[in-house]
Image 1: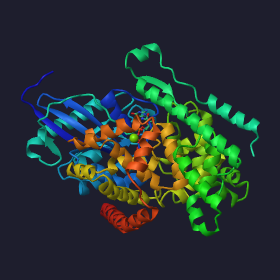
Image 2: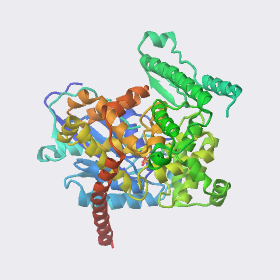
Image 3: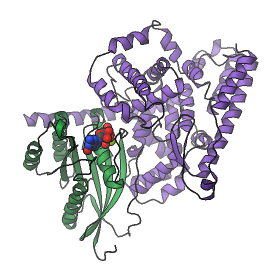
Image 4: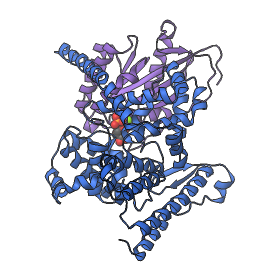
Length: 199
Length: 395
Ligand SMILES: Nc1nc2c(ncn2[C@@H]2O[C@H](COP(=O)(O)OP(=O)(O)OP(=O)(O)O)[C@@H](O)[C@H]2O)c(=O)[nH]1
Ligand SMILES: [Mg+2]
């Protein structure tokens, strides 16, 4: 669909969170629409692009999907530097991953771009019977810290597109007064479903 | 020594390992992507050109095999099982001329590739794994595995989590038997070196070692020699400091060896570590086709860790012109990925890696590492403090 006269926004998005919480699965669900029961673990980071068209703007996401293991932590700044948005992911069946998520939020609040838009995603919402982190717990923490909160499932696709749409909307709203991290882009969009995966 | 009979057996086994790939007529007509299994059981997607390249590579592997057999016939079966070149140089005065000549032949030969059937034996002795194993009691590995049985540690939990996520879909690795073998190797190593414990990335490395070495115990010793002797220290420990150092060394060499690319990428604010980190930690096993990866490892186990730098530089160098006209991070990454995924011809890569990149002496590389170490330590330390102060604020 051709939309004339709307903004083109290029935005760097980073996903952070404990290993195995489903970062890669969320991105792949968004970019390819697919889900794999066994997703290769990410080393370093993987890069993807995806374009989302809203009425008011076209957002071209540069997505950095990072490795979750604790010792990879020291690589993270390279990936969140200059990011316009971040999704911190935890697994609702693991309290440990929720604790890790809070640490990520703190770190981003101190170290990242001050205008960074932050989302908190409680993933694997399909595993209700194994739930360890209550919905209210996630919601409450997000509220206190000014994050947007969603529970998602990469497996069932629940709230996955919503997550990225919400991010896009926030970016579109923020873009005029936000020079860092977002490049207004005049080049026309070539390809809306390209995927680059570092594996 | 091998008799003629066993030599024939070896080459037969060798031949049967290498079926010719024949894309169907349909795929030949259209330039469609075809899927097939490579020598090590990995599913590869490529076009018909790729299949042709792979067939040529297999023919070359076969020829290379014949060179090795004829050398065995000439010099005796285990002629290459002697001190490696680096050790050899230290012992130079005492080395006989023939040994030195053998070492030179061997280096050249290894750069041209070790035939897949000989890989387990040649790697095991030339890497120093055999020597390492010989310093402990015969039962070391079995005892270690027995001692770890039923133990649960953070490392074992992470390993269990990653077993089905290591090359999923591989016809052997992704079976209960494959998972169990990989588990024992990784868990065993996590107990051998608790500083390393388990680092994601090692799962891919150990998996490929298992496929090559055939026996689990030999794969374990290859992993040990790799982490303890071949690679730089602390690549996989705690905060990956060794990996950080190596990335900086790599950036320095890129600026020296490929200045135009380095400048262009810097102007784009593209940090090469964004892509190279995975190459260094997985030793290309997640990026290059398997036979190409193993050709790199052939040289790695004989000449040492500088090979990784050579190959990483070569990947950039090969695409210099294309990289110079990129304007966007995504384009750089897509060029590099397309390149690595399609490098079915190891020769293409290794020629650039050694002839075009030119020599980097081990001495010079060590100097660079020493130079970078303090800066890395300082940076990691500052980060650590900042994060700790976050925790304190928390209370
Ligand atoms: N049931 C369920 N499983 C999921 C979901 N998302 C991911 N998984 C599974 O959880 C495992 C880990 O998913 P990944 O997407 O690889 O997790 P990651 O956060 O990228 O992990 P690292 O790369 O190791 O940091 C995979 O086996 C997925 O199939 C989900 O929403 N529901
Ligand atoms: Mg991942």
